Image (cartoon, rainbow, N blue to C red; front, top):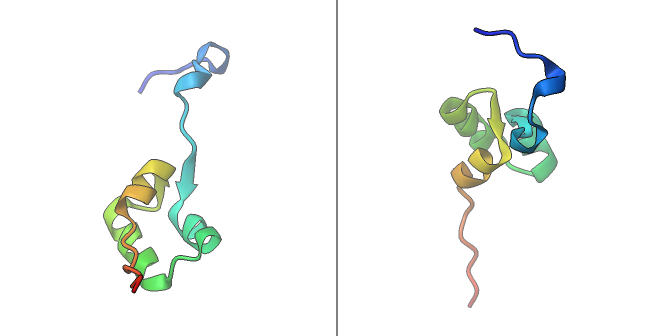
Length: 62
């Protein structure tokens, strides 16, 4: 691993990384789905990874 100086980092490429349990709590995802996401992604993931892996039940429109 290399040392990086914080002042020289490009902030445009930085990503916000969520704690999966906190993200699920904030968005109202149930515990079973939270456990599945932790198993698939680990304890931390980007918001894009979380959104692409959440399985939501279909709502019946009729």
